[in-house]
Every structure is written in structure tokens, then in C-alpha cells.
Amino acid sequence: MQSTRPNHDAAPSASSELSADREKLPGIKHIIAVASGKGGVGKSTVSVNLALALQQAGYRVGLLDADILGPSVPVMLGLPTGEKPETTADQKIIPAQRFGLKAISMGMLTGDDNPPILRGPMVGKYLKMFIGSVQWGRLDYLILDFPPGTGDTQLTLAQSIPLSGAIVVTTPQDVSLKIARRGLRAFETLNVAILGIIENMSGFTCPHCQEHTDIFRRGGGERMSIELGVQFLGAIPLDADIVTGGDEGRPIVANKPSSVAAKAYVAIATELIRRLEELPTTVLGAFVWNWETNDGEPAWMDRSVRPMGSATTPVGFRRRDPRTLSVLWEDGRSDDFDVRDLRLACPCALCVEEMSGRALLDPKSVALDVTPQGITSAGNYAIVFRWNDGHSTGIYSLKHLRALAERFAAKVVEDV
Ligand code: ADP
Image (tube, rainbow, N blue to C red; front, side, top):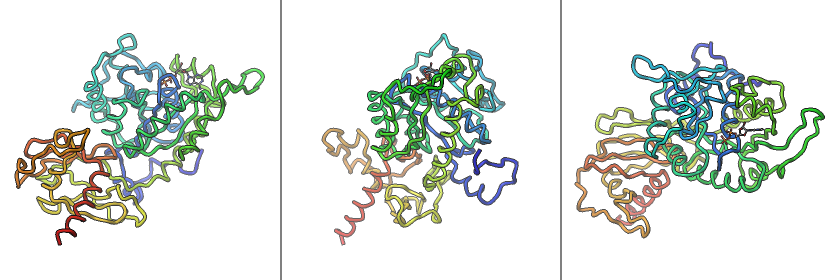
């Protein structure tokens, strides 16, 4: 289908070694969120068919139904529901396999007639389990069918998973475009790249006479992509076979590959692969770093530094000494932070009054030898410190960290 078709049988080459340190999670090269501003726009249908189109192009693909409260992937793929998935000896969940895809969904655990009633933190707990405790094996793409909307659950998800990027599904009506636009902005604030917009239910081609009718106002997705400067990945027409195929566990890409809609999915998959190849690759992978033992120290990617790179994208973290955290930025600058200075600059609600920005933390209350116990990445946009004085609520966005670096550097100049 395209020139980048992978050869999984080949022995590992230098380039695959190189790409290994760019994996988003161990064994998983790309994690892609499929999101929408609201429900019913066809987001799950797109997730399933896009995953299949990528799989048919020769890639190893997983599908995670992150719509914990309204899972629809099992029905769409024709997976058994209400049966506990098998586990390995080390208690990892074995994902279901269908049409060559690996898939996991809350619906597989609970069954269709028992939608789970879960509070927010439990939703997060299940999602963490689906990412961390599922034996995905090696994947080129893990597609996440996000819950609809742009509320807390979605933001928590985007913050806790190192996403390669997000796709936003919309329909041509203006109202849903407005909501999708809000979704785009939410992702941008979390440093999640927008891979593009898909316009679903875009016009109707009569199966008998082939006449095309625009049922909704046409081209909204494309207009929005131009307006917001993001890629338009493509449009999928309204097609009754998508509905029946979805209801009967026969997704259109697998069941009617020569249909206009299936071909539209394949074209979108090709565009998506191209887009991912163009993405900057300097974002560090996820890390859980024990400061004391230095276990899990993130990479220091000197070779990736580009002079025109981003000022707020770190390409290296290092423990210079037990009291100094060094950060290397993509624009080539590196900063040394005294760890106590970082503790004093904690931006959490216990340390800074949210409305006024007034400092609540008394510097005298922070021990001179305070040190981090651990530092963890939060999605693509922040790091989180766990301090040895028990404090662990501070999320340091990369923007905040860079601003601190500049503030501390200016202070040193003043003091001199
Ligand atoms: P969401 O995940 O956004 O809530 P779904 O994927 O569950 O939406 O789709 C909602 C309904 O719309 C389903 O019945 C699905 O079969 C149907 N649907 C999705 N895309 C299309 C399309 N292109 N043409 C016709 N029906 C579609």
C-alpha cells in the first residue's frame, strides 16, 4: 500500500535500535488517542476501522477501549463480553485477538448489559491497568479510543500516558466543530501533538445511483483544520454498512474492503503514518526515576539537540550530583537546578494559593537537605516530584520548569 511497509522478520538493524529509545512505552512505538468533543460522532467506529487499516498495512496494532463507562469496542469487533480475559503467570492480562488486532475493553470484563458504575479515580485505575498490566507485546501503534468529551477524565488520561498525538473526530455540523475545537486546545496545553482531524459522516453516496448528497454542511472539518493550522486527515462518508457492520462485529475495513468508506479509512491510515514520521522525535519516553539509587534515570539525548528546537521540550534529565538536577532542552540550553530551589518553587495548591498566586509555603519549613525520592514523567507535559519530606502533589509543567530556569539564571546575574 505504501513504501514504509515494515518488515518484522528482519534482524534488528541500527535504525530499529535507534527507534527503540524513542518508544513511548517499552515495546510500544506510538500511542494515538482518538478523541471527540462529544459522543455519537463515530469516534469508536473510527478507532476500530483505523486500527484495522493500520494492521492491514502490515503493522502490529493494539486497540485500547479507554471509554471505560461506555465501551463499544467489543460489539464492534464481535468480542465475547462478560468473560474475564486470561492472565499470564505474572498476572498480566492477555488481550483478545480479532482480525489480527489485539484489543482490550472494560466491556470484556463487565458485559454489555452491565455498564460499570465507577467514580473518577476508579476509571483512572482501570486505565492504568489496561496500559501497564496488559501483555501487549511489541506494537507499532496502540490506538486509544478516548471517552467522548474534553473533561477531567480525558485530561487525566492525556496527562498520564505519553501520547504520540491525538486525532480529533468531528462531523460536518458547526455545533460539533465548536466542541472539537475546544478539545484541540485542551490537548495543545498538554503538549500533545494534534495529528489531524477526521470528518466523519461527511455526505452520503447513494448505493444505487451513486449520487452524492451533503446531508450536513460540508467541509467543516477541513475548514477547521485550516483555521487552526492542523492537518486534515480525511473524510469518511455516511454508509449504512458501517452501522450494520458495527452492530454485528464486522467492521467495514475487514468486511467490505472495496467500499468507498473502507478505502477512505485506508487513505487516512496512510496519511497518519506519514504524519507520525514527520513528528519531531526528541520527546523523552516515559520514566519513573528513583533519585537515590538513580534507577530509571531518563536519557540524555545530546545527539538530538537541534539549534532551532523547542525551548520547553527537554531532551535529557540527569542527576549531576545528589543535590543537582540537570535538564537539557531541545534548543541546546542546559540548566542545573538545586533540588531545594525546586522544592521551594512547587506550584501545587498547598504551596501556592490558586486564585491569587500568593505563596503559601514558608521556606523556613523546608529542610535544607530536602531531596527528591523519585521523579516521574506525566504525559508529555510535566514531571512530578515525590520529596523525602512527604510532599508529592506538585506537578511541574515543562513550561514552569523552563520559566524557573530562566528566573534562577536572572537571579544569579543580579546577585553577582
Ligand atoms: P462515538 O464513539 O463517537 O460515540 P460510535 O462510533 O459509537 O460513536 O458511532 C455512533 C453511531 O454512528 C454508531 O451506530 C455507528 O455505527 C454510526 N456511525 C459511525 N460512523 C458512521 C458513518 N460514517 N456512517 C454511518 N454511520 C456511522
